[in-house]
Image (cartoon, rainbow, N blue to C red; front, side, top):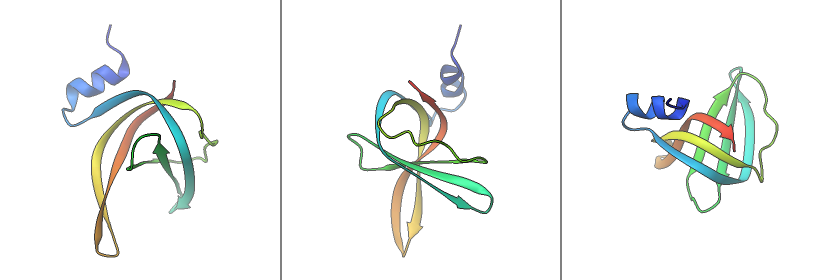
Length: 91
């Protein structure tokens, strides 16, 4: 039987799934009724971003399994890469 992440990966070819990633930074802020969460993962220089309707406890130091895709946004005329999270689970 396929797991939830396997089902997502088979339907969307641009998705990437990683296991046991260690969170070194977690910041959340409220924007237009949503909590925008930004996490940094050990060994990566790119931020992972996701939105939730409710606030979330800090996951600094936790190991996570995450399904994401590459995205980018512009800040002051400079294009920045980020990973948009589709699914996140504490490992």
